[in-house]
Length: 193
Image (tube, rainbow, N blue to C red; front, side, top):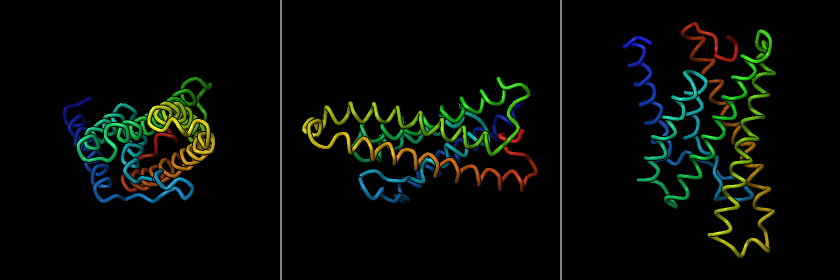
């Protein structure tokens, strides 16, 4: 990679991490109605945008920078920021691994963009749901042990539904933005190459 291309990627990483942090400062969120402490957070979109536009490593860097920002400015530190990072990183990893498998291990790669997108979204959702179920069980058992005998299963059910919806929301918004950006500059999205 040329020095100029590397500088552009670093600039884009800084821009997306700053945008995620700004979204957090502005509290661009809306609550999940059944568990209002769960919030659909627009601050996840810049990392998803980086995944779709540039790549997995760069999207994780954006997420780590956002994590560091939340550790300084966030709520319920360190648990809240770490749970947010785990949710985003697992979603990005699930999407990335599916894209990689579908493009390299299928003879000639899977060309149907819609099927690839849906498959990647479902895998990203499943990865995020599993990781967050395990993380929430651990956190709830240590922070709120009284829930084990009352409503833990209901909380975990709604947490799973929330993570499914949040994955689709985040990735589809990022995908539509990437498609618009790439159509403006004349490049096909990564899922169409």
